[in-house]
Image 1: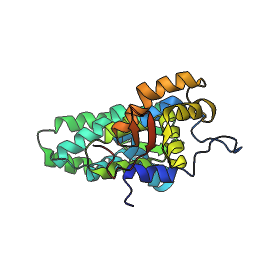
Image 2: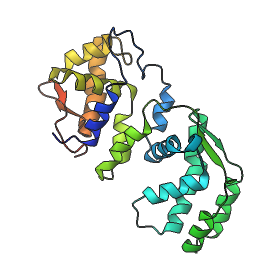
Image 3: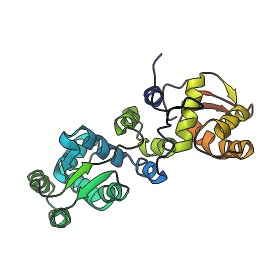
Length: 251
């Protein structure tokens, strides 16, 4: 059977999450909610993936910018794209990853460099060459804590080519939804919403502990979101849930 990137993600994750009375720790149970927030943006996921693969888990700002430019599939000129990515890293992603304790971001003269780049916007090619030659003191980022989900695994979602990476991450990267998906995948059969609600309330380590509240959350929140991206099969009328059989995660 041809597995979609989402289904491959579930298969890889299944060995890392534990349910019920196994006595083993649940790798998602104690993760601060804000760590999930930073994993809902494709560029942050790519930054974490690049850092995890780098020597000493460290990259300079220029190295990250260059790698992200090479990964991008855009029509913008290389110089302008590089400038946009660099600004986005300096003023958004790297400070946020640092604030959440996942990355140690040392800006050095990065702000000054990006201000200088702005003056060179009219000449995209010159901007690209100047940025490519910025030396290593333009700021460094170091991965200091492993994210709750491997960014390399999440990067599988970007292989769809659908252009909907942000939607996929927004719907998927949530502690309750990740555990629900693992539970449905491991069950490997159709189950009722009531059965899933009971599991959420009594077996899984996150979410409401009352079955009625769990049913409400499933019906109005989690199941529609997961069905939207093709992660599960959800029959609203029959109140049945099953593992996804779709080969494409976003329809």
